[in-house]
Length: 241
Image (cartoon, rainbow, N blue to C red; front, top):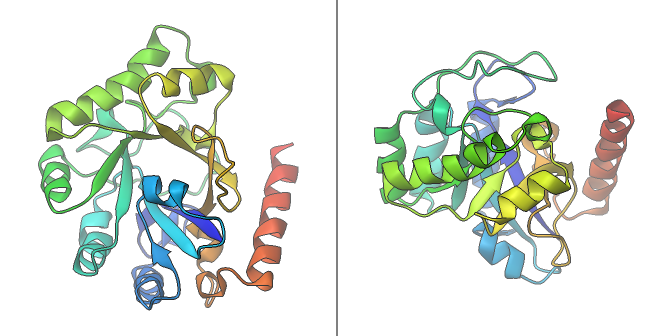
């Protein structure tokens, strides 16, 4: 079994985008125990489906990543990709829409910190400029949001961007085509493991919100884990309807 894991904020608020520093440290302890391989997303895409492996992603580039997550990930040389909404760098996450509710207002990292961490091994991906629902964005602003965010990261860090994450996981065929023009792969919020047959522009991920309970992540690859994630995915679909 292989999967892409999604984190957002490492804090004690208990919000829908948060995991506590203690629980995240427990995740890192398990990830470094050799039970699974931790890979970059390109390597994970190329890996066989029967290899127990994960890729780590963080959405939104919150400041607490530098305090609570990056020191652990860097120490253990765990590859991680961070998706950055570039017009909010150095500001807060008060973008126009926050579906789901219960999200704390948090500061985002600034460009100097992001550039420094890329030199230390962090991979950056694009997450648009203003974090909109891209399905509602008309041309030419759609290109400005997606391609523009890639250009911002390249300009500020000197690093090419290959990956993208759709804000809120919202996408349609038009949005996917726009992402494919500038990125090699893109992540959704579809709650499922990863398979080699998956469309690289519609990659599923497992949200750490559902892995905050004791032993949840540590059960990865078991029948119990599969059943739990299938249940969560089913509930999410029902709520979406």
